[in-house]
Length: 567
Image 1 (cartoon, one colour):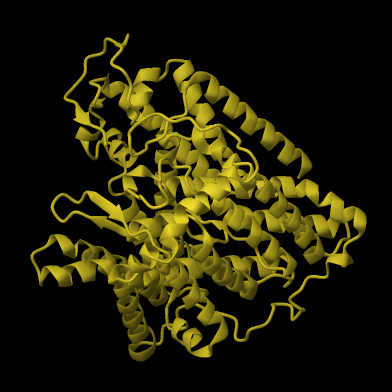
Image 2 (image 1 turned 30 degrees about the horizontal axis):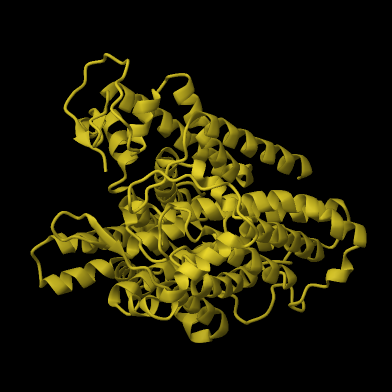
């Protein structure tokens, strides 16, 4: 862990140096001007600014903008999307740690941390929750504790306290400015990666658990019902989502059907599956399952005995905490950067750059990390896929051309999502209702999330072009300055980005998934290398990155085709 964290720090520094040498850090702001913040600020400056800028909205517009049916539909939709990973990761951790941390801890931490983050963070649109890299790190800590004959939970708690301290220091010194070196090149790769992961997970849940298991485990009728349940859920959500663009019903009803499409699809899919699986035929399917009582998985006291760890180990825990800090710092800030995309037209908090709010958000995460550590709960950090789905569910789009008008920036949906999850822990009635939701229904929701998230992504449109699905999508690009990028350069960059998506996907799904955020930190280095070696000329890369560049000419003499404006 020590060598990994040290090498990770070296890699990040090299990346920053390489990118900083070759290009400016550019941010989209309301004035469309370039702005390069300093890497670090005096102690507390960034945090104070974030909370001060957002404070006027806490009790006024945040409440007002949250009181509508779209916020309610978003909360119902994301409730399932946030609960399922908590249960899944909890079950995996329960097996790997011999019951010392399980589903109850994951669901409880998801609920409490989610409510506090939504209520306190300067940018409440983000969703925090359990992530794959954090789970992998926790399991590596368990392995370390076993090999060193140390108690797991005290070691976990001390590592968490050190991690919280490092994160707090990073927040107070505005270290989140480091992500200024991530550009649209990185954003496009991550957005497509998230969408593909949704689709991949949904397909694996549907077909990997039916066609890929022995007949003694999954019968033909069971496999058929699983596939049918998932496709009905996916199809219902997709059709209802597109209802807003039809002439059926009234405009108001079409809008509400579109907003509540995922929630309605879950209900229809569950009713259909329960009718066919229980009433008409005897075909059992796995359903959501929660702990039956409010207690720790191992029946231990909630407070971790910090003094049970030897003094030397308490200090030594600072070393693996460096890797934990790196993972959480990158995951949280990458998620925040994607949430703050200028295309979403968020304005609260005097927003000028994609960095606004990050320092305050990171401070809240550091405090929550400390609190969860001392009670033996899993750490929560920015959940990129769930955050992206949350933001998209809150977009206000034009009924004429489908363009984004603004985002409902408020706190009620985040508080509502995680309050509902908490109710499932505390009361038996919600647990009973959830036990009626088959797991294939959630697989259909994952497919819906993936396919809808791809719509409108520039990289996805270009991928369709190079794969000959849409031949117009790889034509030459230009921006407002009149600078043109040739079609061959567009295709070349698209193939490179597709390769990056494939590598990140492979790494994320492997046993080395714990280092996937570190690979994201290397993407600016990849971009720098493409420009430095002239694989993609600098001016062309700037156009494809959506930057404003002067029309200073280009040495490329390739013939271009019809140009289209890049958004």
